[in-house]
Structure formats: C-alpha cells, structure tokens
Amino acid sequence: MADCVCLPSCIFFNDKMENMPAMAQMYKTKYCLEDSSRCARHMVFDKKGKDFVPKDLFPNQIERAKEIMK
Image (cartoon, rainbow, N blue to C red):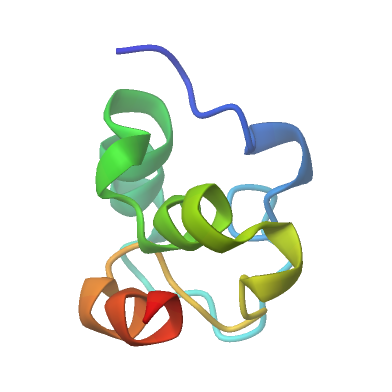
C-alpha cells in the first residue's frame, strides 16, 4: 500500500507529539507506511476532518478514534 496522504503534516510521523511511545518506529511502519486505513489518526481525519484529530491520539488508539467519530 502507498504511504499515508497525511505524512507531510502528521505530528506523529514527524515526531512532534509529546510522549512518543518506545514503539513509535514500528507504529510508523505499520500505520503510516503500510496501511493508513488502520491508523486511528487517519480514521478520524478521513471521517471528521483534520481539526477533529486530537494532538495526543496515537495510531494504535482505535477504540478512542471510534468514540471521536460517533
């Protein structure tokens, strides 16, 4: 799959988030470079728009993303 369209402005991918997890590089590969459709940040972006993506939402927080998208 292609890289996520959000990469240039994604604060997670560009290491601009506070408290980056130790597994950040693995998440970047899995969610940003392989399958962005599984990324919690991308899900919220796609459904509600950039302004609804919380600054502290990590790509693996799918349940939290579902709550935001309700």
